[in-house]
Length: 115
Length: 116
Image (tube, rainbow over all chains, first blue to last red):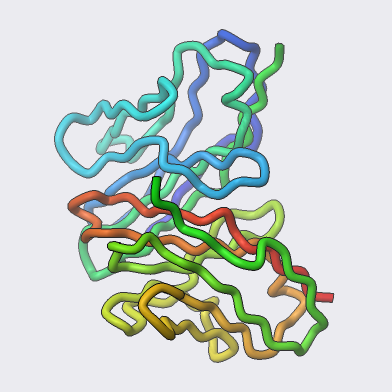
């Protein structure tokens, strides 16, 4: 079984400040890792993903995330946020083994950008 | 840009009624999914569908739920007799390749179901 923990339900940040959204996972198999963003009244959009290779992955809108296997983490970062980054951010995992092809999501972190 | 489309965007129904939520996945995709998000909670996996059959389902996906791909384009979720706790946003998603290739699920904008 897999699980995803997003420690912060809400993160307020001033515009142009850096931000880190935390994600930890647990799994009995190797995983693929994802961050999705949900803007108000919209569906889920992929920000970035880690499948293999370099542990630092870059995504859209200036976001990046680092896979840390020893800490079972996949924290999302952006060096300077914009008001348009206000949204709900979901971390998700998918197991490589056992035939499980669905995504397991965390509870989400609401990023609030303050002017 | 191709996208996953869902209808209706919002449906209100009485408890005990049957509901069908419709999805049109991206045309060359092979794997299809339904997820739900109860208000204020996390997005939960319901079911995956490949090669015209269910490949995986969660414990949420009980006998009240069914999925179908009635033609070459639509992918439907049916709830046979809705309960109050079925009120949620339901997301359809599709994927082209195996997870270890593109790894990306494309999501629709969701269908909000309200059961009274």
